Image 1 (cartoon, rainbow over the protein chains, first blue to last red):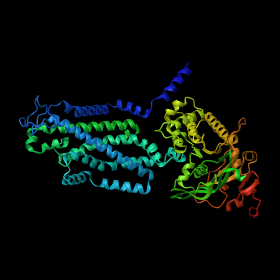
Image 2 (image 1 turned 90 degrees about the horizontal axis):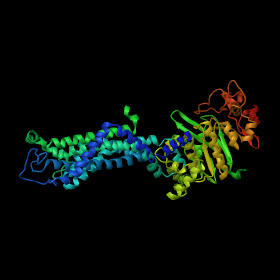
Image 3 (image 1 turned 30 degrees about the vertical axis):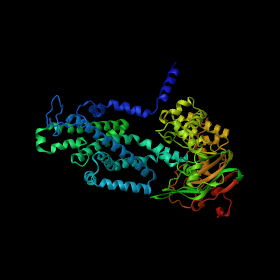
Image 4 (image 1 turned 120 degrees about the vertical axis):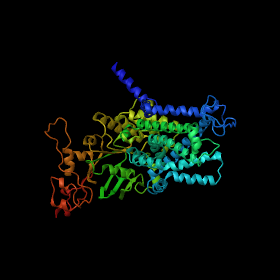
Length: 307
Length: 330
């Protein structure tokens, strides 16, 4: 009978459904209360932003001249702005934009960063030099001034307001890839010396297979963590740019250009409902993302925790 | 005899160019392997056994390593001078390699099945479904039951012995003509070692493959080898049929190796060990490299590198003790 038990046990271990690494990570992540808090907050924010406007009668920036600069009331939960738009609805619509920019630029910069990092780390030599020197140059220029210049040029070219969103996304990922490329490259440099890579060499596999099937998946844990934290950074940068009127511009709402109203002293002192909600939204979103990212890092690589 | 050789290594020299100097890891090594036979390369750690194997496979990464001289003939092709593209068609397809540490030689993020399928898809151009079928067959062949389950599992879910079986399955996947096994049993415990060796031996005989087995375990050599090459400090110091080497070892080093092997049913207070260590492989003087540790050293050993001298048809040794040319007499 004991034999039976043992056999059952072994079967269970081997029979573990695919990607047991990820189930383990998930388990560890679920135990981390702060990370889960961040996660649920994010889910909540996402749901509100995506579905909220559908239930609002003030959607699509409906202007109502009769209700200008109203304080919060049961009609307008967070009051109205100087054009009579409902701030709460606008906040949700802005959230869509800000989150899209954050996620979009993360995906773009992760793609660029990992592909270039993998190539640089694997081929070394001249490829490495070109990619890494490009990254170095980008990293030596402080990000904000660079972004300001590029967005100012964009304003000069009179890019239509609805496309600015995408251009901001591309610019942010342009700024964001070097850090990731470095991270991935360093990982690849160590991975390529590992024995299993020598084994692939001995099997005569082609380079593309070695790169994208053997090496790349090994960097996923790292990339996922870096990518998550990247979203927070991108949302912040987008807000900064929009606040200065260089990123997403009105009438398209974004959390950054909503806070812009705090620029006038009257609004700042007398109408806090205009700038506190978007500020809080940015704060909560970015903190949640960071908590989740940190939790992910701890869950994926417990050794890094002691750092 | 030479015509039947599947692999012919001539004068192979692999050096590593490091900051401290040139490491002559493999130094004018020659041997040949006949079809269907097993050749064992023995020697202690750091004497160039693995580097020899890696040079044959074209796995020396340069820099720092470089094959400075020599030829490796395999089926009418010189592997040293073959282009990268040609080499890739041979690697894993006609010659395959089994590594020392199965735990680190399998990619942790890919399932075992995916890794067995890879060479099949790459070299035999099978579709995914065909490759899968064959991979499951291979897992069965190397003696693992529940092959379907193992196919889907990740390397860390298997024991060391099972991982080594998988490595063997990968090496066998394309039905190679030559298998190079680099200390395939070093990382495994003794009971598993015997199983793995039996497995290798059986499959080799079944498929009429040739094999180069690198080991420092003379028990293993006695069991599987047809021909033995003894290496020391990057050089071949003695070679011969397994029978010759065990019955009548010539070189003091080979004798020492055989003496330092435990013998069952014989009580010794202390196991014999050859005194001293392998010399530093950087900047070797033209002397017999075993000179410092040798019991029978002579004056000439310090001054001159011994040449290969024939003991008989199947046995060569490079030691001044057996050199009958006039250089030795002076």
